[in-house]
Amino acid sequence: MKPSFCIWFTGLPASGKSTLAGAVADGMRRRGLDPVVLESDAMRRLLTPEPDYSEKERDWFYGAIVELARMFVEKGVPVLIDATGNRRAYRARGREVLPLFAEVFVDTPLDICVARDPKGIYGKGRSGESGTVPGLGAAYEAPEAPEVTCGGGGPAEAGASRVLAFMEERGWIERASG
Image (tube, rainbow, N blue to C red; front, side, top):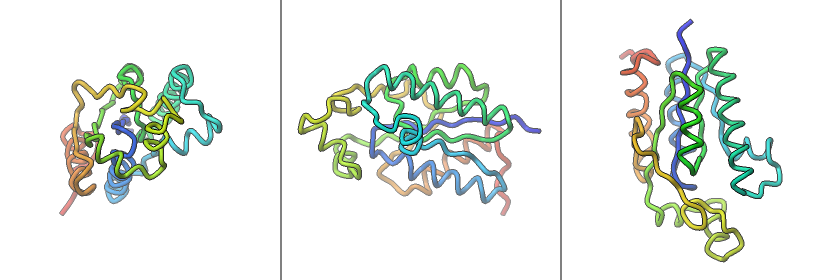
């Protein structure tokens, strides 16, 4: 069995992480792989149904995500983490415990993320209702050396092609036929 891997899609809230991770997952499925996507919104509903987004809670939450990813990877299942992970330390933990790990930075300017704001979190941050929004009240520490950087303003398919090409180059997935 070929060793499995984990890719963490990181970026500001509303940067396009979910869209890109979904497009990459679709590309993997077309190649016969069935990745698990650990999507932070769904995981929060399960693990922290009444989140307070404190630093303590985030430390625990992102640690739990990494441990879940490790469990799947050890069983041979590829994992895509779709989560802001606003501190480098959260993502560094993934790199420490997962032998085949990569960061994909969805680099979208804050003004575009604010304009999208599908969940209204930037509105809460700007009104003072929440002081923990990454990019506003809480710091977002961009990756220093991500394996792949994609702009979140362009077509998801273009970014997905770059991520899939990276996985091919690493030998994590087979090259697409055709």
